[in-house]
Picture 1 (cartoon, rainbow, N blue to C red):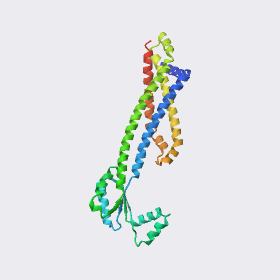
Picture 2 (picture 1 turned 45 degrees about the horizontal axis):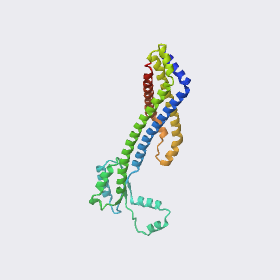
Picture 3 (picture 1 turned 30 degrees about the vertical axis):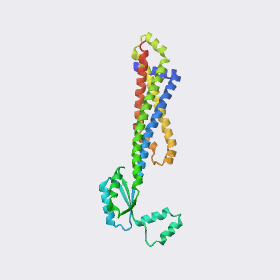
Picture 4 (picture 1 turned 135 degrees about the vertical axis):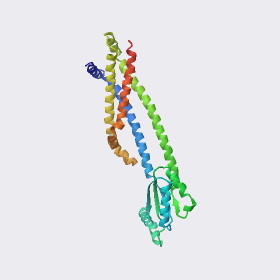
Amino acid sequence: MVFFRLLKLAWQNFFRNFGPSVVATIIIVLMLFFLSLFSSFNILTSKALEVFKEKIDLSLYLFPSVEEKEIEALKKEIIETAQIREIKFISSLEALEAFKIRHANDPLILKSLKELDKNPLGPTLIIKAVNLFDYQNILSLISQSRFKTIIYNQDFYDYQKIILRVDQTTEKVKKGVILVSLIFIFASILVVFNTIRLTIYSRIEEIKIMRLVGASSWFIRLPFLFEALFYGIFAWAINLIFFLFLIGFAWPQFDKWFGLGFDFYSYLSRNFFVFFGPLFIFVFFICILSSWFSTQKYLKF
């Protein structure tokens, strides 16, 4: 019964001190919003890198005279050397048709092709590896002299630089996001703590009067704890609604620009508790601890 009385008192105090309550709630909303942005940035960075890795492939351009058994032997060695997700074979005829389509608006090139007695293009192997470093193993294999009579060109060397750059960028982004998140969380905790402390300080006379009439420490403290929880709950709900609205409104255009092919709004819907649950737990403990330590000083009167 006393618990509900104190809860009711905290609810009344929340609206009685509406100005400070609104300020504290807005501060917590801003903290949660920026934490949501950091979490989104981490997710989208990982997704963007995954999309980029998916698009990486290595093309081996073979001589037109290469026999089918030589191609099969080459494919077998590649599969044994690295973890391969896919090897796509493009025949000489398919390569020629693709070449004609790419140069459909260049009549000079098309006319030159007609002058040739035979197809100048050889077959192609397009390789997609499971991991980036598997391409290094393939590169080492293909660079052997015994393949010089089979492969006349390849694009491994350009990708080698890209692979190293992607790997380095991934590590830097992960470390940077973790560092910035920790700094921001620490700063947010200080801001929320001071905001709640100032809110309680503005009611120091109320605490003194309650002390004089014999109220216990818990009876004085609990309404402030509940009130701080109201700040956190309202702030969490406001951030949830605003952030989902923002993603739903802005994400289609954002995805159109960057071409990730990733429905972030659906992702948030499927992973609602994974994304927003930790934010609720975080703000719950921040509000409780801030209120606890803020009231501790004034309960000594």
